[in-house]
Length: 276
Image (cartoon, rainbow, N blue to C red; front, top):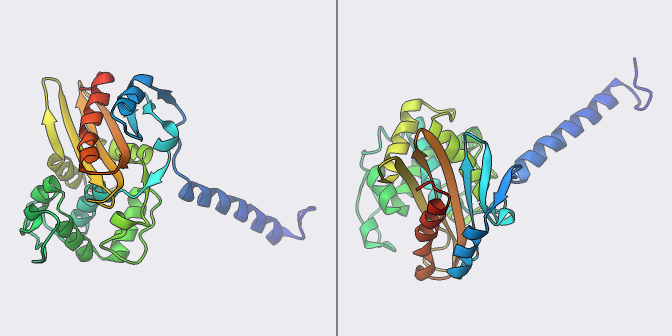
């Protein structure tokens, strides 16, 4: 029977499809918001005391709750810079362009911003040094279509990579919010991304940075537009007493002095929250 409002069944169905499409587009375009957010003034005081404009978010997986400072900025997308080395590693392993995190990749032989980058190395060492040319080579091996397909598969940020496979995480168009970083890392930390469990474990292994009596810390920094002013990141997670807490910090970086504050502010924030 024809719909009384529309001209016919196809018109009614078309309107419904437009409505569904609008919802899908909205979910793809707009960042994830934190429904359950607890603002912490003491973390805000850390940022203000350091003269830093930024945000920090902790995602408590067990409680599905967010705690942090500056929710509005935590929901705003920025270029991920070198924090994208985490998903880049997983994609490279999953499509088989490297056999493991220790296979040596070429840096290209050109002078680099950091002398330590002027060396062929595996991903284990490259991620610790945040070696840009090594990861650009990895991205070129992956290729644009496989990169796009896998970023969609892992639902990372706005999922836009443009047409330059070795620059999209450094200059855009790929962008991600602090909350989205925390949610992505929650799936990686638990090994529930749609990728082989062993490969996720390999990625987790190479981003471990510290440990204490009852906790293990994983993390990765990033600095968009380095060494010039841009947005700095520190993202990761803490495994403590059989619970996992993921986190993401981003901040305005004006110089190398500001960049040094990323991990310092992040660690102080985690300590205030009793996670470290």
